[in-house]
Length: 119
Length: 119
DNA sequence: CTTACATATGAATATTTAATCATATGATAA
DNA sequence: TTATCATATGATTAAATATTCATATGTAAG
Image (cartoon, rainbow over all chains, first blue to last red; front, top):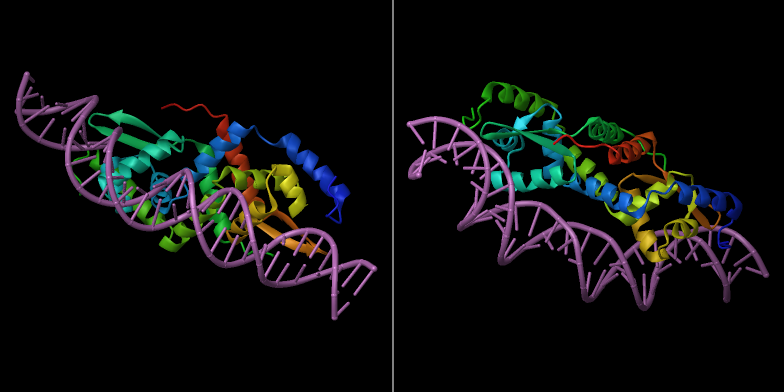
């Protein structure tokens, strides 16, 4: 037991709860990597654009105002982390948001923007 | 209009939608910074621990198995980005998850872990 | 008011990562 | 099958960032 803390009993209980609910190390790494994928303004912008609908690479470039190579690298990062998915249509690859959980995360982040903090 | 794309009409429409719904650059930066704050396994772990309840710094160290200085730096990053908040109780600072939007993001990320991708 | 304790902060280093350029791949059409 | 177009990839360089160590701050107790 840690005795530097003045409320050890409650915290000991919370720590136990936290440890038993804690995901496996590998799951934590995967989640962290996914958050990292959308933690760069350029990639987040791509994701916000795709939340309006499916787009090919050139139109993504147009929507976010960036170059083909940079966007392609970013799409790979987003796709490797399952933030987005792609399908081929002729010469084009069409990208879209992976699933409803990703949309939920974007929405929560947008709403959190307008939240005023207590502390 | 971009003509390299074989479905220009639909994509032009989506691009227009995307641009009109696109948050301001500054809001994008803020959101990205917040995702970045929870994109490091060590910090995500802290957040997951706090999702079980309020904790003081020493108990956070115990819950995540890291040192005081590292944890304190990470708490600052999380707090600066409004992922967590703190209140004082005697000698201790008690940290907790900022609000329900953050909890929603964590939950969505956990659920997304178990999602099998199409493409 | 001085000591001890809980937590924060600053500087330094080592690692990670984004952007760019040049080139490669894979699909279609001629 | 060759030329062209859409997109991906590899290497390089420059910038961002996590950790550690040492020290500072602020609170409470004696």
